[in-house]
Length: 198
Image: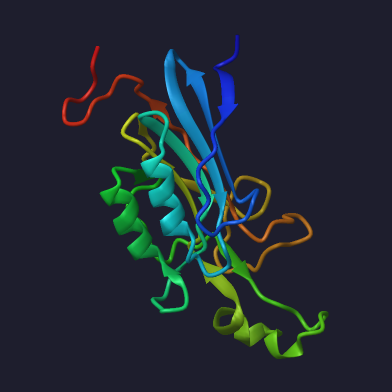
């Protein structure tokens, strides 16, 4: 028998997102029933917070492990979701993120359009990459009190390392989002305010 068994998909009533953007499953892990979820947010991140509220309203278990492209942004703007506003929401909902507090400059994207595409007005010269590019903290691993994940690792090379200031995807790393990883500790019987229950 594997570490995780008995996976079953759970339907969460949609609230603006497309079919395939949200996946929620329950499964057994170490004798506990958990919810695992994945979400791909809209470009400006406006659906991320309503989606998270909706998932928490319909959460079928106490434990949750949730990986997402939240599409949050470093700079505050009325047209995009801000990373610190998102952090305020998920902590209010009782969740934590791998790596601790959100850091607006802990980027998980840095890409820019080249001149080898038809929308030349969106193309960036080498000296305009930061100004015109998409360099933002968009990706998260959220979890309930049943986990501890004190650090998060980013990879934009395919070699398990993150190089600041390089634009990706590259020929060696084909994604426009960094890969995130973390070593999580699981405490299936942890209760709020009581530490571990043995």
